[in-house]
Image: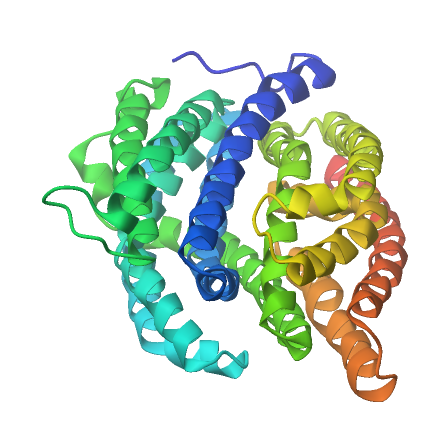
Length: 452
């Protein structure tokens, strides 16, 4: 596999080449989740609520995976930009070792704490039982997911987002067939119920791992890999830890933010949780181009920062935000007009549909500012300053929303929709401040590095 020239080709062309396959892959990943939501609804409304409430816990795996893929992408791409290919190859091997260590920790934590965390969300016992049936299988598959995501970080650093896209497309179609097979059973395969959703996921991830391992084996960095590269190199593992932990913390805060929202949403009943969870799947689909731009900015900015071409780092940041916000304006019009029809795909319960539609109609106006957060996080990861993603995420998704929703529910006795009107105000105010800070900080940093 030949790498792209990320420090020479036009920024707009690179954004298209990297972001479009990444967005397409994430589209099928999100559609994968939509299929899970659809089949959960076929089991029962309680199963649908269980899937929604499982998400913050499943997010533990997602958070660690994002940390690993971002850290390996940033460090490998920085090394490639600095023409240090042998160091890049060492990071390939060490990121795989690191992912195994993290997977062990996440599995133990997830299996131990899931019951208590579900109970804290106000879940009834039936919902807890359904959610743990699903989550136990998912947490046992953590090793497969994190190793797969580490391999993807290696490919992303070289501009290859097509391989993971292929994995996600194939996984989506597998899921359509495997979900009913393991949920309802057929022939010698018993009916596993909601656990069948998780079994199908683990099988699809295992196949994806094998394919990505083959693609890494065929890439240019493979020529520098040897068995000695896989022996622990504590300085490199330390660098991976320093780069990934702040990103993981940032992602955990996103999970905590979702947990907070579900806590307050659940005050309006389990149908509110079911409607919100269904609507969230649709919002994720519309964020796909933004997520693709996030991957592109991390890869392009990472190599150009390593090569000390700072004007291209600033250019990719600015253009990505413009492209992302423009798309979200058009997407917002669509979800505002079709909110009720969209949520009705997942449930025929009118009350759940109303809750989901109320959320989507407010989310339509929040959407255009989301690219600022996603792309600014990618920028700080690329310049190896991930701690700022932690600070921004804590303020935007934990402290400010919790304070606002607490006031709305317990002081003002507000409605379900009032929760999200408060989030609208928080996101836009904070988004403007984040953009101004990112510009100020990077201008100052680049000037300092140029002087040195």
